[in-house]
Length: 231
Image 1: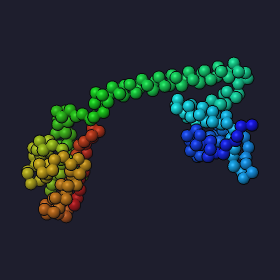
Image 2: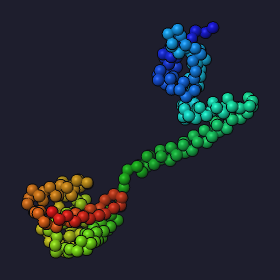
Image 3: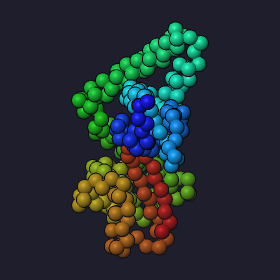
Image 4: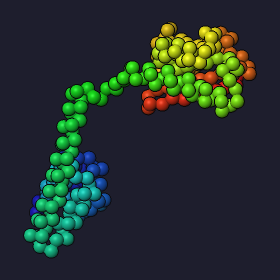
């Protein structure tokens, strides 16, 4: 009789962890042939072949539940011929699935080679949209709250482009002291632009209690929005 192996010996032989061997047991994919006097699980030599077979199926893309189904189909077949037919059908499905995955990966590879994963921006289109949408949502916020541009103490636009903000200012007819920009100092700080502007306005004493402040922004998505704050 071949020497029986403990779980640690089996795991070491097949290059798996003890936890992996226990998991195979829990799923009914592997069974010990007996236990030692001390209660240790003992496996026959064919357990090595079985674990390597399970690992090979996993390498081929089968999940452990799929391996369970594979075994059920094989063991539930009425004959060897039927069993082989079921196995061939399973492998045919996996081959089709693998070919579909490879095709998707080839497309992804081409996209990566072409740099399509990098974001691109149509600057002209963004400019045209921003200079129309930003004034539009400012006016919408004012109208919904029953106030006018004359009531505004400060307009704080998103700091993506100084030319856009200057165009919005002219479109709304606001004077320089009612529009705040700092992009000329820091560049585009993305989501931090408006908070930075508010911090600077507060430290400069240019916003005080009860002032009506309008925040307006546009960005990725493509989205735009405004907010009125009674300070």
